[in-house]
Amino acid sequence: MGLFDFFRSEKRDNGNNFLRVNSPLFGGNSGVAVDKNSALSFSAVLACVRVISESIGSMPIHTYRIEEDGDRKLDKSHPVSQLIQRPNKYQTTYNFFSVALTNLLLEGNCYFYIVRDGSARPTELIYLNPDKVDVIPFEGSLFYEHTDFDQPIPQTEILHFMGTGFDGKKGKSVLKMQQDTIGLSLGANITAATYFGQSAQVAGVLKTDHKLTEEQIQRLRNSWNSRHQGPYNSNKTAILEQGMDFKPISISANDKQLLQSRQFQVEEIARIFRTPLSLIGHLEKSANHNSIEALSTDFVRFTLTPYLVQLEQEMNIKLFRENEFGQYEVKFDTKGLLRGDSNARATYYREMMQIGALSINEVRQAEQLNRIGEEGDIHYFPLNFAPIGTTEEEDD
Image (cartoon, rainbow, N blue to C red; front, side):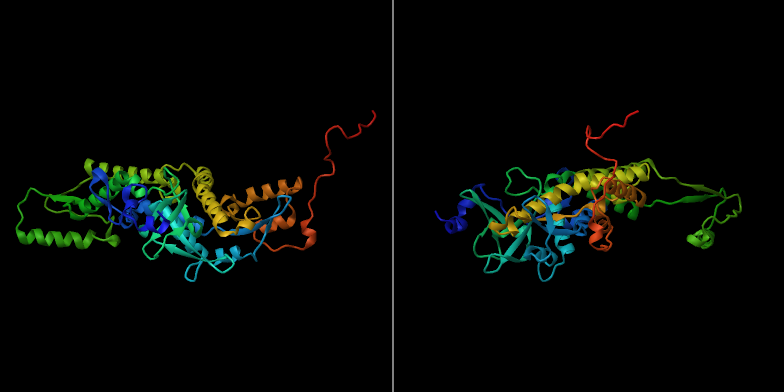
């Protein structure tokens, strides 16, 4: 059977391919519908997706030419470099990678169709909705079925950014793998909104031993609200008559448990996306500034780096022609996110210059400053440095 016959055959439904799922996922025992829109309605999910996708979207990415000696030279004139700066007619680099990571984080997959010219150079990257894509294994290769294409697309023509999976063909959706956790978070959110929005919870009561008429009760209510309700009337002294007493009502144990449950769900969501709590506005367990800075560094190393490596490897394989493979590469620049404060950077640059590892121009470029000419490319080293055993000892 040929590829096109296999493509149209119902035999693809025997489990060898991945069937499209457009309906919402139900959150298991939570009973709450979980899909992209509902998941993003929970602030912790939205914060995690935003901090990862926007961090990578705002990160500089460059194209390098690899020399024979292993040195990498920045190549802004290469077609791939220009393609990354303008992936298509309607997306910027920032929007391109933000969309890619948002789909990757929630759907587990993100697809872009590679448009090529007559010389096989990629000229455009077109976003494909993951809900409309099926991955078809056929004779040792992968092909992609999309509702807008009449024929299967070879894997060489698709940028496929893939999340956690079992077979290397398609990633698993976080919404499906963690539907109970996300569904429980959504359920707690709905419960809290319903409870506090529809409950008859009051801040306090006015008590008296005297019997009041309906007119007196209404006049007392209006008088109390006009004097003490609103931000401009808070903390004013209350004057009570006829033996009245004000008794405040504190939050109940059930209310406290609901709030604690919602806080715990925030930590659960952060754990799923491997995002430090401080980066999503949950600062209760962040001890001090130093610990937050260390967590931010770990965020780059352990959360962003796996995504960056996958993006780089997929683009290096699919965007460069076969005769360019291994001679060119695209790479994200993470130095901006890993930089410490000004004192720490100054100490680092000074020590690197003292051992000849960095030149003045390299330091200035790292700080996004202009070069100072060819003399700024000179590397210096201390004159008293020499290999061990080669110095002559002076006589006593």
